Image (tube, rainbow, N blue to C red; front, side, top):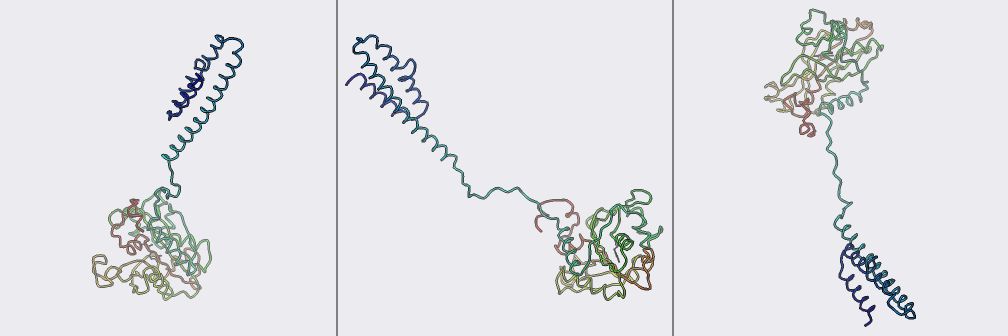
Length: 337
Ligand code: DAH
């Protein structure tokens, strides 16, 4: 075996035993580097007789090319193996479901809010709005609640200035609507209202929906039919509804609307305090004083109005006994609906 043959055998064995790019590179340096074996052989060509030199030089060159080729092949092989290893260890299953960001849910008060709008919407009612900071005149006076009225007590009402209050009910939207629009008027006005009160059943901010219908020949039968229809749409067709004489300054006559207790079916329980009935709205025929305040001809037109608490409807519908839960924004509570 010539010197070259044994070198080729050594080189081949070394690179075959190498399993890393770095190791392979080290072999390359030793054989093909500036101070490597091939360079060494080239330097020693001088020691050979001039006639034999070209042949020897060509022989070295052949070996060098062979080494480079073997090296190149091994390097490609190792790089492929290395890439396969990384690809395998970093395996990504693109069919796995993604992780979605946690999402909240509509507050149950607003679920009911939307439902009320759609029930009355189906009966042809438009949605009207008004400001939450309201003129005392629209909130009280125009609704036939003069200065001496007990509901105007400083304890119930948030005053912003001498004649501006946070509206204590949605009834002022009746006034604003009738000042803008001649009869026939058929609106509901849902929104926030404010009272200085806080316990299990009272919150300083809560939601009401006002209803108002003014037209020719409107009677109490229309009011009763409308509210009974609403209760059946919201709570089920088998729920009884009753109307009880009451008093509101802005209606005459006035009625309280009760529905059969959904908890006990009318037998009497803790929720209805043994009565078998739940109070859900105030209502009545719009008082002539109110119609006059907005310049509606009381000889030509009559109307009915009603107002109810949206939280109250939500509490009954979902069986919630603490009003404050609606406002704490606890996702565990809110996401149940
Ligand atoms: N505004 C009343 C309240 O806040 C509710 C109400 C009662 C509204 C009777 C009406 C009505 O329109 O006719 O307690």
